[in-house]
Length: 330
Image (cartoon, rainbow, N blue to C red; front, side, top):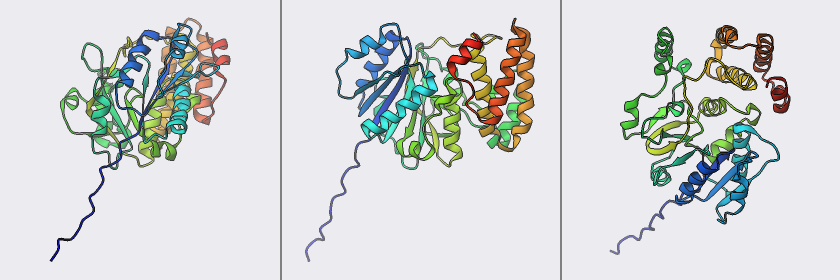
């Protein structure tokens, strides 16, 4: 009896991964980032230049690579607006399966994208890379996290940590998670080394450009999770973030208009994160704003900004234009 003929199963189609970089006046960093991306197996690279004046646009215009699409909006859209535009262009131009986004001072380490593509991504909607400073230490500002309001034990640990000034440790990944090999379920991550499945973007929408800066990445990844998507941490997929940000920061946010986005967007984030707890969270956050007034010399102007941030955060209203904010709160 003749052997039964079987049809060979074809190998899976390669992932069409498209990178999105938002840039503003960091030409030397941008050069490193673009070189690192184009050395990886990407189907496309979208660069949104937010009105750079340091030669970035001229240098970008000199590049010739069919995978590169440079977008130059007429005005500065902020990080959030840049990613909103970049995601849309990536989907329209390159028919992406997955998007990966990051700032112009970040870049994948060699082999990062290939390592991502070799993972079993079935059932996964988003993924966060392990982000390090150039010296090899973990980049604190890009440490993924869980939402403590969705995990009772974490909420208690976070509240306990607030008493000793270590609340971040209650819900952010620990150092040992970076040394492990397996993927880990998370709730939120930054937009540095953030991978999102194209179908998930089509389901939940684009990043919210009206947020301009601050919290847009956490809001987006929390929205993904709240919609039932799976978001994971991939410790073997590594990025470098050559930034100078310090989480300790200053007691005063300068220029003042940035405080509006930090406060207003914070309320947007907490509405998603805290759910039924939101009415209890709002007075705590506002109290923090009021206590911070002592650090601002123009207290009347600062308090007016707080009122606007509270109003727009509660109304879910985009508020004043960016140009208006920078004029009134320099």
